[in-house]
Image (cartoon, rainbow, N blue to C red; front, side):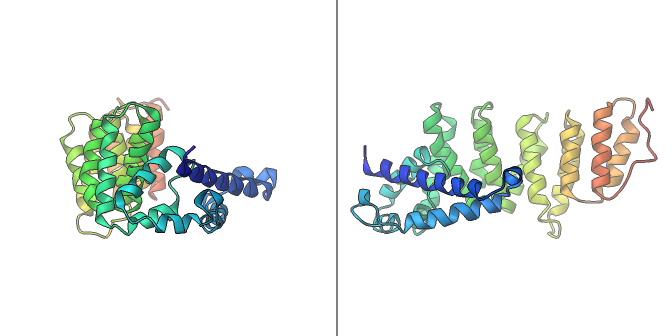
Amino acid sequence: MDREKLLFESYNRAIEKGFDRLFNNTAPEKILKIKEKDITAFLDEELKEWQNTELDILGGITPKKYFDGIDNLDDLIELFKKASKICDVDVPEVLIQRLKCYGEDFVDQLIKLASLASSIEDDEEMLVPLMAIRFLGRLKAQRSADMLLDLLYDVNSENEAIIEEINEAIINIGDAGVDGILNKLRSAEKIKDIEEYLLYSLVQIGANMRKKTDYDDVYACIKETFIKMDDKIIGAICIGDLGDGRAIPFLRGYVEKNMDSIDYDVFCEIKAAVHKLGGNMDDIKFKNQ
């Protein structure tokens, strides 16, 4: 067994230790209420200890010193690829910090790895582009936004893990992806699953850019997409999440104009969205009530 495999397996054991400590220190009735920040805090403590512990498999040096001692980007990328397939939770942060020292060259390598998602079929190998996509998002690599949008249409439509990872990365990248999303949604003749993902991403980004000058384009596109899409329930949820009170008359108007064709579930979801936005539809009764 090679040294790097043993190293990353020791990382997994540190993760397991963190989870064990968390659950052992939490009352059974509170386990389901554990928040992500609590998990992160427990894991961070264990992983800091791991990266600063001298390991026999590394000849008595720490993981941090081991990674910091590698001064070749290609070698570090090979470690990133191995870690992607072996590590249970992300790639070790101490390795990512070393890779960040290479700046845009690291981003270039991530883009290359991410692009492989459209051609790989093996589940284990797919973990490499998946992790590359994740870190493009975490690094907010703006110049990868268009590539990720195109990749969304190139990958296997049944690979939900990759599709969700791409959308999460696009959300994390933020404003740089907006123009591309607008173009995809506006040019779509029919709103399919991928466009529904993009609508969700646009809403998440748009909710944080309400005071920016190009927000009105985002708002207009969200309304246009709602009109085009078949699944009005998803559309209503997205508009509610956007949090823009201007959508109240828009949603009320849609219900009033289409009362004869919408079903009760759609009516209820639109009503819930209107309520979430600060309005109400108490004066509008469903057709059979």
